[in-house]
Image 1 (tube, each protein chain N blue to C red):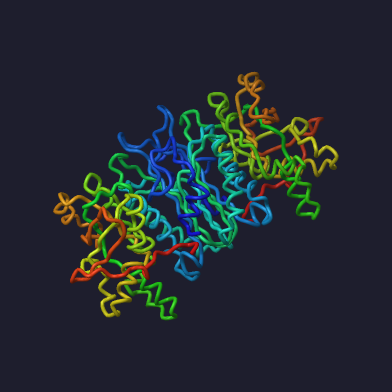
Image 2: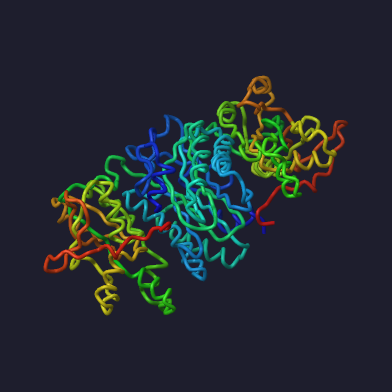
Length: 317
Length: 317
């Protein structure tokens, strides 16, 4: 099977509906944004052995490759439109490609996000996705729009995906049916929640590197500090039996949660409490932004804890 | 140096001017297209050892990574706007990164094409670029718009880049100052030519896999065949001393030319002849599209040649 046959067979089954031109030309041509909205763009590159285990189920990998990009749109409050896929494959394995494209296109269909074009080549497994959405530019949930005194909210629960990674690295892989495996391998991007926060939230970021690390990015861009009340942090239920330090490490710095962290004025508190998000993604208030620099995590009695040990993931450190 | 410091230092020196929001958030936000135009998008993934030699000069690699994407915009008649960069690096080599980003941003500045965002990770060297431009959708130079009887045109000269690759693979690398090396390592995307063909040309494609292979794509999408008159093919001057079969192989199936192949009605012949393109990219009429299927290459006396041996490059064959 050649490059063009591969694309036709696994990725270009249906013509695009919304875009003006999809796969098969030098460029795809996008439809216009709705009036008053502009195009939001994000890109991610996933590599075998770094972003996922080499033996990951290919359908889950297809799902997750798109999910992490949809999560970036969600964190901006953008409505998904379409994506491009650049794929390096060590060989043409039809079973693998069938499962990968099924997982990818399944999630794409759920978010009405069209595959617009791509590039395939032979090489060590790598998946590069660039995703497009639209958002009203004045309401976009930028990282630099937080204000001192804003409540801080987190959607869903934290720490499950990091638990699954930790157990696997320790040679005690959780069984495939364990809910933490699903959270790691098939995260649910909070697209509807992000969209519903337009006009309510000031700033947002998605949690890929861990709560404290990503909060650090939001604080830095907004020129603020933050206070997190540890008892309010929505730690995943199946971390309950772990020692306290482990729960903190996984929930505060674990990464791979793909939940939303956002700041909003107190006046929006009641409205946000009623937002259910998708499925289990209900937002939970965890602290506030402060004019004082630095991030403090407070125990139940208000004592601040040292958080230096919970540093965010950095690909080059 | 961490991931964020790396981005700041080498890639985010200047804020975006045209886009609403650039590097540093979950998404970039693009400016609106000019009235009557829509967004054109293309993506390419370049891997070490496959798309370029491991020891390539990093400044040239940065240039070429963007050039192949700009060439896709040119082939659609689109005006460049911006691009995202996904970069996997085996290590943080500041000299390498400095040269790579210089080459990349130099070409970007020449085409007023902004770096909008990206993703960096550690891994085998890989460069994924997604590029954006705008084009009037009704005039876009789609591959499927060719008509029987259209003239076929090629910009510039063919075969130089393939010569440089062939000599290198044969252990006889051309000296760095040889013009074929520049054609391979620093191709000139024909952006202004593509733009000037709007309203003149019917269909276009850029030459990345070789004239016959890319003509095959254009013919397939347009449901037509083609005739190429070999004496009209603009074979690069420094191929003159090679045997006939070598000249044909390099010019008809060599790849990496990044020239434009386009079809246009006879009525546009005079106007197109006067287009100079950028520098040495002047278009040259090489044949025509035919209602009869198949691609024939005719010798000076009109005899058709078998062209089966000049197959296009395919990453999975």
